[in-house]
Length: 381
Ligand code: GLY
Image (cartoon, rainbow, N blue to C red):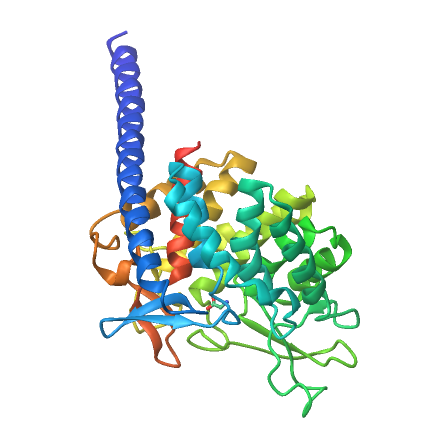
């Protein structure tokens, strides 16, 4: 009898502890989102006179800016839309709209696969939150531009253009990141293209252990695989952390958009690969197989957001617990920048492209976007 009572007491106290830890995390995420909103407003004020550009990172004491055609251009307006949704702050809405409109020319841009990131994070959130048909028309036109990059022989949307004219048999590159662009295509009704791309990726991008290659190079005339390799990772055979994050997020999103079980199964396989590879603070090294240690907070933020959504579909508590560990780290002093510092970016310690020695241990606009999304997803649980 005594033993039973003790077990019951222990169970109750662990439930209470769990609840109070969750409340603490929620409260620190609310605080972090307040800092995030203030940082974005300050950054918007800094960026207004720099016409035609969007903030991307912060290096040597200066905000690094990019043209609309840079793959990161949609994250700054996107994060302001998310923070407007969270706070109702009209100033954020005004800035979000201003910087979204800087991207209008992208509707006719056919030079990259990244239009999903660029247009759906900006115009997609804008339309979702306002219902203004102007935003919708840009999304629809951009999707038309994006599908010009689909090759039915390969079964994929081409990622990069390198070497296209010189080597049609050698250089049709598809990267795992490209899964993220399918949300906009599904939303616009291009189901066949989006699902064919996802299915080809499932077939060709993954190793036996469910880690993903970064790049698969196809022969665009026959659809045969020429090579599997890396671009931003440690080696062709290594698991670049952000690539694993894009895969996890991409397949979870495809399940949300389609209801097709095969995408949920693939997301779970990727999650099972990632979980045991994460370190004590749950923020991955930039590449799971690299000797060089350099945390990538952006990969941690993307994973956290995806794990929360995947938890919603599976009710697997391991995913929620991992997302909580990641959010706790990201919202701590180790990663969250104090107000007025870090070039007004939210997170420190991101890695853009370590092998090229560009953007190493810096803030990144996409890390900020997925951190805010993850925090909002967690607060909404
Ligand atoms: N899509 C490019 C990157 O993740 O760096």
